[in-house]
Each structure stands twice: as C-alpha cells, then as structure tokens.
Image 1 (cartoon, chains in turn green, blue):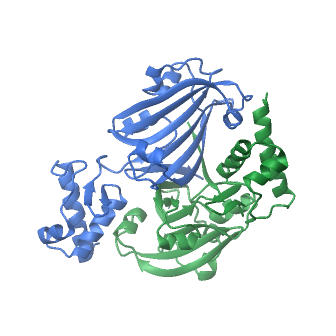
Image 2 (cartoon, helix red, strand yellow; image 1 turned 180 degrees about the horizontal axis):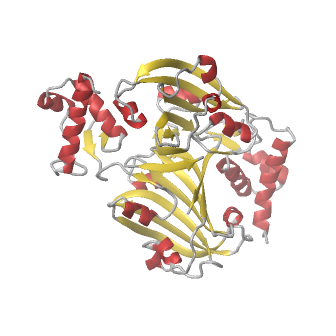
Image 3 (tube, one colour; image 1 turned 90 degrees about the vertical axis):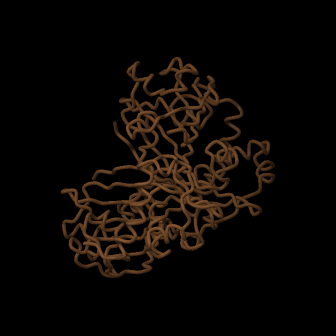
Length: 237
Length: 237
C-alpha cells in the first residue's frame, strides 16, 4: 500500500511524534535542523522538509522565520467547535481552559448590538471582554453582550469562568447559535492579546445565541488565532 | 426607541444603501469623501465615519488606504454556507456562479489525500483545481480530490460547472461534510487568484464529504477571501 518515498517521509513524522509523546521534545522547544534530521534519519533534506511540512500543516510544529522549527504548546492539533461554550469545548479535548477578564460593565445597547439582540436601542446589557486560554495558550479575544432583561446579574467571578455553566443553572441555554465568520489581519491590539505577530490572519466570528423561542440572549464578537488549532464543523444534509 | 445620535448615524447608512439600491452608486464605484458626506447630509464627520464603519463591517463598502471608500461588487453582504455546493449556495443568494478550471487530471492519491479519503495510497483520484466566482468576483480557490472508484469520470465541461449537480444525477450525494477551518495570510499565488493584496487574511478550509455509509468520496482544500462576504453556520444544541 505504500511505496518507499511514503515510508521515508513517514519516518520523519513518526520520529517527531514519538519524541513529543515520550517527552523528549517539550512544548515550545526548538527541534533539530533539517540538516541534522537528514543525517540522523538517513533521509534526504527534501524528505525531511516534506515530513516537517505535514506536521506544520497539522499544527504539531510551527516554523518561525530565521529561527527554526518549534513544538506547538498544545500537544496535538485539535478541533474546536467555536462560539459555544469555550470552557466545555476545551475540557472535552483534555485541555485546561482559563480566562482573563479584561472588563465587565452594564451598558446600554448601541444600535448594532440592539439589532442583533432584538431589543430597543439603549436596553441594558452586560458587556464582557475576555481572553480565553487553552493550556495557557491564548486562543481568542471575546467581546460579549448579554441581554440584562434575561440575564439579571453576571459577577466578575462568573465571567472568569464559564458564563454558560452559570446560565444553565438558571435554565438559560441556547437552542441554536448563528455564526458569521470572516478572516482578518491582526491589529496591534489583537496581536498583543493573542501573542501573534501584527498582521497574522485571524478568524473574526460573530455569534448570536438564541433561546428556544428564537430570542437572542447573547451576542459575541471574537478573534481567534489559528496557529495552534482548527475550528471544526460538521454539516448534515 | 432611538436617540438623536442613532438617527443621524442611520441617516448616513440609509443614504448610501438607497443610492446603491437605486443604482446611483454602482459596484466598484468610489463614493463621496467623508467631508463631502458631512456637508451634504449636515452631520458631523464623526457621524459619517460611524455610518461608513458599519457599512464596511457589513461588507457593503470597502476602504482602500490612501484611495477612498468603494461600493462592494457583491451588492449586499451575504452569508455563504461554505464547502458544500458553491454553485447552489451562490444561486440561493441571487448571485451568478461561475468557474475557471485551472487543471483536471487523474492522479494517484498521496498519503494525505489517501488518509482523508480512507483509501490505500496511490488509489486513483480526480484532482481538480478551480477558481469560483459569484457575480464575477473571485470568492475562492479550490483544490479538490474525488475517489475515482466512486466517481468514474469527470470531464472538463462538468468541472467548469457544478460537479455536485453532476454527481446527484448518479445518486452520489453527501450525507455529512466535515470542515476544518483556519485563517492564513495570502501568498502571492492565492492573492493573484483571488484578486487581493499579498498577506490579506484568508479562510483556509479543508472539507471531507461523506456518503451515507461514512465513506468519504470528496476532499477539498479551499482558500476563501472574505472581503466581500461572510461564511455562515448554524449550530443546533
């Protein structure tokens, strides 16, 4: 089923993956150069490059220009169902979620937020800005609004953990979530928050979470870095 | 329900949208400067800027640095369920789909494609490279593979239209589609194909379309520019 070229190139992949698995290669560690790998594994540099390329594509390794090839801090590439319950999505994948709360305030809705929440302009909302981490890696910056008529109180302590877990205790859960996704280049602000270079391509996602009666209770605007992971979706016919 | 500031800022939006609707502003046309709009509509430049910003966010207008503000060629921002049936998605939104076929060939699957299609390496596949357009705007570059054991023949003529329509006639339809989404910066190659600046943030999507029995028959690797539109998804609980 496999020819020689395939086997050689998988040799490189297996060498790296097994060294990550057994802890020889630690997160953030720089691995050997192409030339060193080529000598050690007795394969051509073209073969080394092909193996490394696949691991970069699969988010196991990252290349930094003029520096070298590094082991990604999230130990294996993982798929992330974005926009709904960051904490539970991270936990499902064996990653430790954490949150840095940047701000929490009760503010009147501007026309955009009011429109999305289907409320009159100036209706009170909870506005929450957070950075979400998985295994200490900054994954996304979120600006979220909750309709304060539906969600009467959100404390800083709640916002530092899972707001969705908190809401579930009050029987406020989403029936469906609409997402709009675009790609955009990181400004300095988001590059700093997400620990990426300015201009890095980010996913910009708008999320509207609705109750069973169709009333939106939560809208969010998020910027995801995708250097360490994928977003995943399944669409059924 | 609205205060004065809201009304003024919506004045700007309504002025632009009605001029687009009645054809005064044509696709690709540069609109008036902020100063001209401020005088004409008798509102502050801050208000003009706020209105324009919302229209840029909603993909109705585009700003080009040092040039001005332009009407987007796709007449209204639209949501695009990506990765399944580009032609039918475009048509549903009243846009004319078209396709530029870059290459079509029967090739043995490399290890990555074989893995995704769940076939042995070197199994024959149809490899098709295309650029897809909606209303003459390049939306995405696609590299697709079809398992030639399931899809015996794809002609250039078919590939220039909807392959999914063609397959449906043979009762080959997807039961579900798995997507992986990341953001990436446009290389020169993709910037040229999609008519965007090098380094522009693109959506990079891997799609695996499966038959009812779970066997993948089509894998695709696409780059979407999102300057003119959104990708949309709905997630149900």
